[in-house]
Length: 299
Image 1 (cartoon, rainbow, N blue to C red):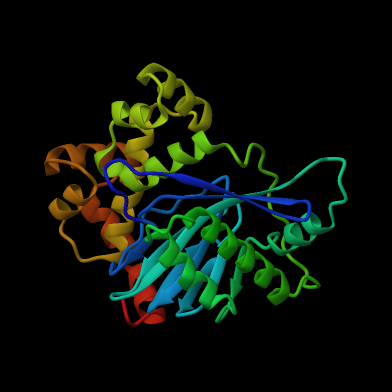
Image 2: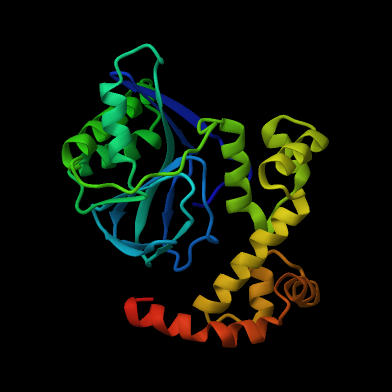
């Protein structure tokens, strides 16, 4: 998901019965025309994908799934994943959490949706909510005076259709128990590292959070048990490994893609992180690359 220099995040609240949904999106929510996704990562939120046209590959720790136009997928909290988007394709991506509206209320709707989302990777081929998703795209990019109300109405329709489409009698995998799932600040931090690690700046992140750099550093340490620099380096190294295994880019090109201004700094960081050189790593990963190409010849 590509972002502008100063993303404008918006939060949309939706209630169905006693189930509360908290959708979060930015204004640039459609990814398109790229071969490689971001580095493997996970969230404390559910992540929703809908293929508007073309196709994409959803890569998770549990396996790979190809999504074609009209397909819908939802990733549960804690599942490590990334996406590979085929050329001339477009996907819609949003993030949401699910909570009960009150501990004292009847939780029939909450339990129904929780059952649906217990699957670590929920995949619904040719989802019947295609028109609702397409309207959602139009509303996001429109200047309609009732824009927010229209977006919420679309989200409501999509959730109702999901409930009607999904067979809740299946035996779903248990999802991990994730606390503080609607922590907006933690979401912003996670999204910043995922999408901005090549050119990450502690001062820019602090500005986004309306906090001081010192406060931001403490929060990052609490979340990841890493400093800001350590987190950025880890994201860069994971992306470098991905590019080594899935592309034919040279080492110097990969260094640039990962945010390094020169190959020497990248080489030193890579050797320190992995204990091997980029060229040695690529040779080791070549069998994985050959396997992916055989499974997905279009790459």
